[in-house]
Amino acid sequence: MEKTKRSLLCCAALGAFASAAHAQSAVMLYGILDEGVMYQSNVGGGKRVFMDSLGGINGSRWGFNGSEDLGGGVHAIFTLESGINLNNGSFGQGGTEFGRQAFAGLSSDRFGSLTFGRQYDMVFYFPEPLTAVGIGTVIFAHPGDLDNTADSVRANNAVRYMSPSYDGFSFGGEYSVGGVVGNTTANSGYSLGAGYANGPLRLDAAFEYFKNPSSATAGSGFFTDNANGSSQLAQSLNKGYASASAYQVIVVAGSYAIGPVTLMASASNIQYSNLGGTLSGSTARFNDVDVEAQYTFCSFLIFSAGYDYLVGKGVQTASGSTVGNQHYHQVVLMGDYLLSKRTDVYLAAGWQRASGTSSTGAPAVADFTNEGDSSNNHQVLVRVAFRHKF
Figure 1 (cartoon, rainbow, N blue to C red):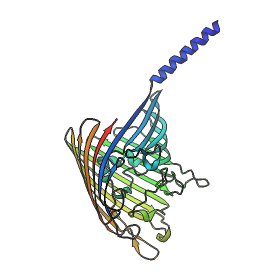
Figure 2 (figure 1 turned 45 degrees about the vertical axis):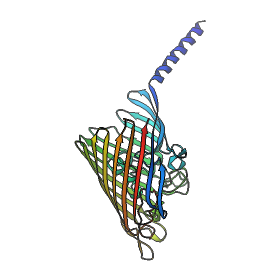
Figure 3 (figure 1 turned 90 degrees about the vertical axis):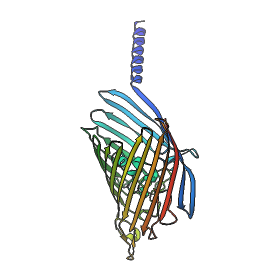
Figure 4 (figure 1 turned 30 degrees about the vertical axis):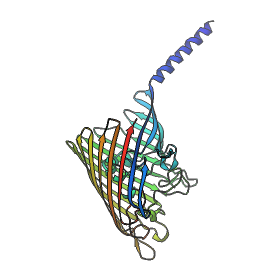
């Protein structure tokens, strides 16, 4: 009888502990639905009007994140987030089920966080919010998204550390394990980032490097990170550089708020190194600069505008010809009307003009963030959309 009493007391104690532990845990379902109608002036030989839910201010998504208090300011954390194509119900990110984010790890109030899985790079966490796409839609993104400031790709098999803020200064680093048998560095890469915020001023920078960024195995490598294996080097702007054995990008950005106006600027250097085929080990280089402004007219109406200039340095082929000496000018505008804290409607428009010779050796054509090569050297892209957060 005494043994039975002790067992009951133990069970009660365990039950109370489990209830307390459960009370210290939290799991949240969240999402964004961003659906719009888009008009593209020149693509595939003609005009195009289509529905889109992936290229808005926020690509449509749903996800779970959770946190368990382990004591001493330490938490077990996770995030599972999937892109949604509202128009046919399919997954975003090339059919990848949790293609936006899928990671788990530990977070400390004092020491920062360490997480493992499919994750954004340091470009996303630091300079991206201060670039044009940080205040707009895919229309605002740099041509071809060469510097990944529009999150065209994520890092698979990644280990990421993010620091807490030290008087406005923070930093982070990430390493993506390649996982290639017999070659421990193939398809691997890393990124580093840092930022400083003090009152109206914010400064951020990131560096990223990937070895063998394109892979024949779907879902591996950097440019071929999605489940369908499609490469982000798909348009004429950089299609000719798919043979690169290394990819490198540096992005610096800053912003300054003056009352209702926030001014921003960024600069990027992108390199596709040790090119194969007729490019004989050459390196293709791009430089991108942008400036933008956002004006909060009132609590429910925001205007944004930006200008971007991209230049590609020419690469000489084995036959002596030059490819890739291309120039892009881009102007973008947006108005956003908030119906509530969670619902808004917006109108965005952009104009782009290209000149020079593309990476394939043909005349350069306009390309709004991989929405499809223009039929000529200029293109207009317009989006009218509705967005709801939950």
